[in-house]
Image (tube, rainbow, N blue to C red):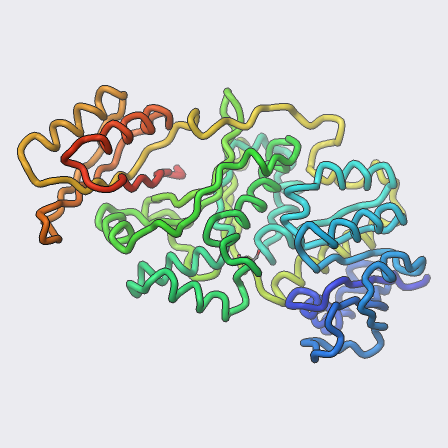
Length: 436
Ligand code: HSE
């Protein structure tokens, strides 16, 4: 039988890793796939610079479309990223009847619905394990391993750069900007690092996981996204004093009213496993009704780790080449005609508890005013911590933890407290989750 011929688009970090890992483990991979697999062509826009992989035996080009139009190529591996040229290449590959493997989370989160429909019409597969949490096989775990379950919720640390920044701030008291520069040098950060720190990268990944978990179309535009750039060293310290850690979480939860889809900094109890996922590592906690909570931990980025997911997808496609398209695992875990129109809840309807840091004057009646406003808005206080005045102006930080309340009530309470003449600056609000 002829070998299966692969064309790789992009020989950057993940592309080189794919060539390296496939070359290194080819014997085991062939035994697993049941067919010879060969990268015969690769495209890169910069053929002059040395590559971080052995390209011997691979025909190189700077024209990716040439590979997509090559009748010998059966599987196109898109590792360019972004939603510009990458989208055009993937659409053309599908049109040409080729299977596609991609690590492109932005592409799947934004255009997955359209791409999957076109792929289905053409009888080809788009595999995207590497798009979420790098080397962790979370797509396969949810789509196949947890297929018996009603998935109730999932929570993940799904951006290594953000997690590295928060870990360094907590452990070493380091400054946000300085740690970001180091994460960029480590090669984890996105080309535009605001995607990491403002939660966009995590929102892409969460959108994909939520669709697979709940059988709903991809709705990236409805994902609430808040970054970590406003987290102060004080918040990290106070959270720790209260027995919590601040993590940048992606959370998706099915409620009777709809699906919560949100990425934001979150206080979680320090004893939770997820609270102890540090540095650039990723982890996803998935709660199924039958299996209970399950946790998936590993490298969320990096050359070989992401290549691990890319090659697993290639192997899956090779194994399924001779099966009927309708008998393959559906792209979003549920059969295409059965996706649900469950609404994504607006953030104002989400119910959660909160950490508040309020800078107030240290005088009689201030606390009474604040607690009155909270109580009038149905916000019940769980803990209060008043710190010594740290500043010359006599202002004191007041830290509060609340019980669960619907977010719109908290929004009203916060704006009323901020309007008090005794309260300085805007209130820092961080959501809390027990993940119990
Ligand atoms: N920028 C991403 C991260 C890379 O830091 O996790 C993997 O998507």
